[in-house]
Image 1 (cartoon, rainbow, N blue to C red):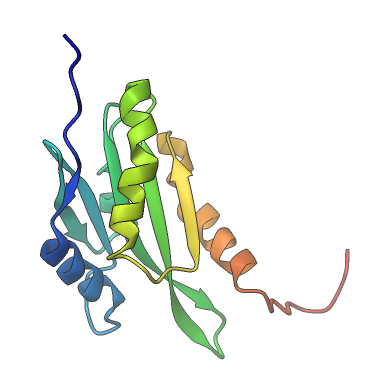
Image 2 (tube, rainbow, N blue to C red):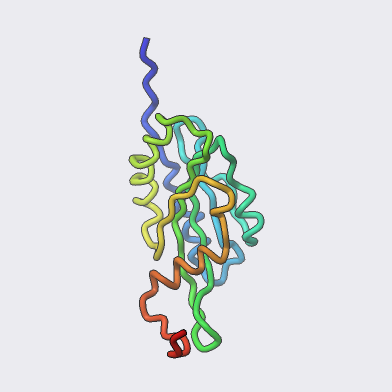
Amino acid sequence: MVKVMAMTQVDRDGLRDAYSEVRDDKSECNWAVFKYDGSQVIVSAKGETFEDFRAQFGEHERAFAYIRLQTGDEMSKRSKFLLVTWVGTEVSPIKKAKMSTDKALVKEVLSNFAVELTLESANELNHEAFLQELVKAGGANYGTGIRE
């Protein structure tokens, strides 16, 4: 007997509300994590600190996350957004493979981000690395003009 995985459903209203909250500069909420509840992707957690964000991901889990970070200098600060796809190291190959089609469903709701990352290990959940990716994606990064 072949076991067929159910089609993934996305709680669009829940995701859209969390997405709007993270995108709102007046909101204290800086991130939202979306996990599987059976075959449905739902809002699993929302929060303010990067430490709390990091704690959301386990090696047996699959998840998506949307996070707001501040970039720029003292002259111009701006919010930038990342989409993270998390596939823990202990996730089965079949569930890993399903992530790409599921990500397409999630991206129908979480459509606005500067950087997209796929991560699988806790040490990749690094605030500085995320900021560096955003700066790279931002293009014009003038710095001091002095070359080493």
